[in-house]
Image 1 (cartoon, rainbow, N blue to C red):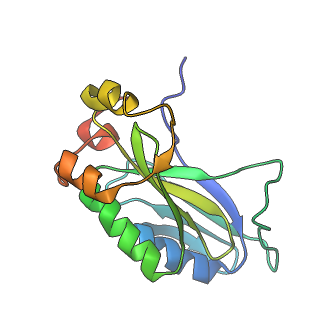
Image 2 (spheres, rainbow, N blue to C red; image 1 turned 90 degrees about the horizontal axis):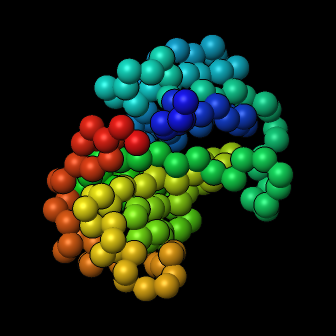
Length: 167
């Protein structure tokens, strides 16, 4: 019985309203259900899940930003490079973007939500290009070269789960 993909994530946050606004405005989640001041359940448009993200307000706590035992980050996948570019602009406008990486098999953005919780938004390289991407050098993670990436693949090409990949 293999695990296929993340079904949903649940985060403890401080400032539920602010967090709901952040995730709806930057990543396009929609509110499925909310318990005012306590919890919200958000869903990606078109998702078949009851919710993809649960947010529970814990009050004045804040993530320290330093490594700790526990969750490091979550990664959400977009279907096209155009969607990754759109996410980048929204995250930059929100002051949330903290990094960009090329992991050879994925192109990734890193951001922090208003509570300081880090997350990744990534686009999967088409499977048929994995070998050539891995042959680009010894380092598995390098700075994301947007010019190379947008020249190499059509920005509207769907990959990963958007293209029906079961993994």
